[in-house]
Image (cartoon, rainbow over all chains, first blue to last red; front, side):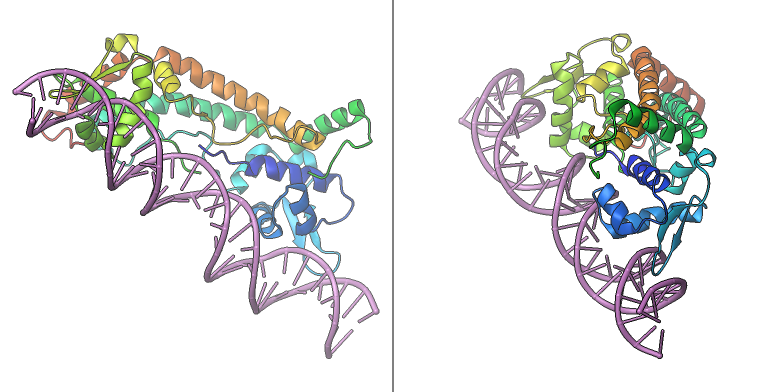
Length: 151
Length: 151
DNA sequence: TTTCATGTAATAATAGAAGTTACATGAAAC
DNA sequence: GTTTCATGTAACTTCTATTATTACATGAAA
């Protein structure tokens, strides 16, 4: 099962923006996330709609954070990505007539709902500021040279 | 992100086996799970290696449960399927040199690890017998006619 | 010895995400 | 104003992982 890496990719991009004076182009962000500028624009479009980032066209254009780091939670970012399912397994089928299926769904559904709720709760409490602080700590601990290789 | 439905499909198949006198063929199970006999054999091969089911060749051959329902947990079934990842999102990247990435991984990793632990714990306590009981209750509540449509 | 069922390798089809191309839009620089 | 730079977005291609299918070997019972 292939896992969705958009959330961590976006976090990566947002932290770069936070540490960057002035707008960053899709091109530059694409290099950070080792992907393609169009993909970056597509992904960040969702965040823009939620007022997390802003974009400007033309000369000196690009992407900037639209709010302070303290005011951005993982939950919002997840929502901006279209709330992709958090769990890798299907737990509700499209065949509710079958009682066997119903029993299976009920049993799995409870466990899955709990796990999802836990993740949502965590996502709601973690802000980008917390991530940035963590980064600063690591940066201080390991020294500055070669600490970031552009990925 | 496409979700893995093998777990619920297998549970569906095992409950059918439990309610069936004598072995069930891959063909019959494939119809239940609306898939293909070879896929059924491939999937159940893992369960057979763990002693959850047995298979017999030739006339009157097919698949039977190798243990009582009380002695089969969701955790074992999950393991028999190769322990597919439970979460849909990637939380640890293959680029640990980047400190930004590290901070992101650390933040997400904690939340994800907790959710996974919760699911594993639940999987360990739910037996097939519990699922079968739930099915019986539904069956009794809705009456027998047309209760199961072969899916 | 025929029939039925599994065991398994090899290949094809599918679906979903990601990447790419192409061009329109708009803002600043010259 | 027109050139340059950057985003906005649609259309299309590639990539990749899963699932489905085909083909044939193995083994057990009728």
